[in-house]
Image (cartoon, rainbow, N blue to C red):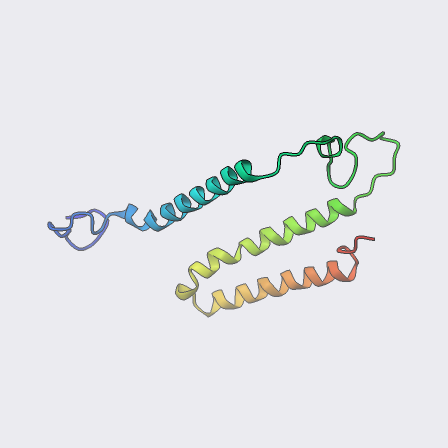
Length: 136
């Protein structure tokens, strides 16, 4: 008798109800992604241009010189946009688990995600109207 099922395990196929079997597609996807990323990094270092220069080797951070005096004026526009991007990006990530279990949810799950999307959209419109996405 298999511990993970109410049905007896098939003696001809002992791995039929193995719980790790469900993780195989996920592990396969991670392996394929790791191979593709490794190949891209290897090919870019192998085939990429290797021209060095004073401007290219100088430090550059967020559109500003990284070592300024603290008495200089500090512009926060870039950091505000970065924080808004992270905020909306994290909120959109919550849609993926919902999409995975969409068929098992009832109408309450549908209405709750609809309210979530409306609140997310209202926050985006508010930030847009306030000019948070302007670079001026």
